[in-house]
Length: 221
Image 1 (cartoon, rainbow, N blue to C red):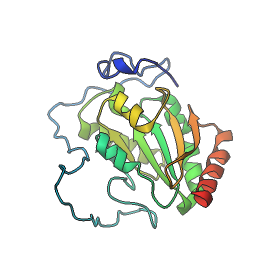
Image 2: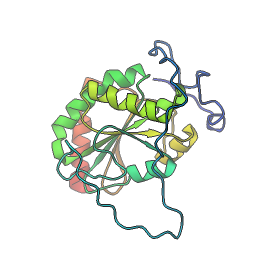
Image 3: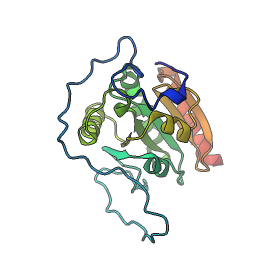
Image 4: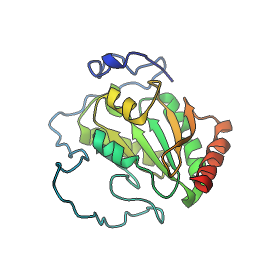
């Protein structure tokens, strides 16, 4: 867990200069080849361009009633600011948003608790991870997204993540985060209001309050 307080300097400090590093952090990955092709980030159509409703085919392993499109049911999808906003739009069920990174020890340590919460809520809520992996250990977007997806799968995480490709300050502003901290976990009601917010690593004592907040959000959202 860490915090820094000068948003205006964030965009110029992304990289290996220690912005998101902390004592005991997992060692950096080996440099990734720069020639790897990158998938386009999810973004919006140009203004004035008519679009037809998307009808994606169901994803293998997706929960019944889960949203498709910009919010992945599994794996990891790169998104820019517009794509992230779309992925976090409210649906018919509460949405649990977990900000995390594979290089963040507390993020990794709390994953089993998120898995328990997801099992406890079943189909009554949706989960999504927001990966900060590009903020501190940069590489090609395709390679990083693949690594995040593989890491989550090996950890038993049954929900998808989006890999944010923009500047940290944009993410903090869009998500209304008042501290530059990872991990963070929020419960959003179907009307978009925040019903529960944990700044820092989830503990065993947080699992039931998270579940209770999501159930309450569903009944009142």
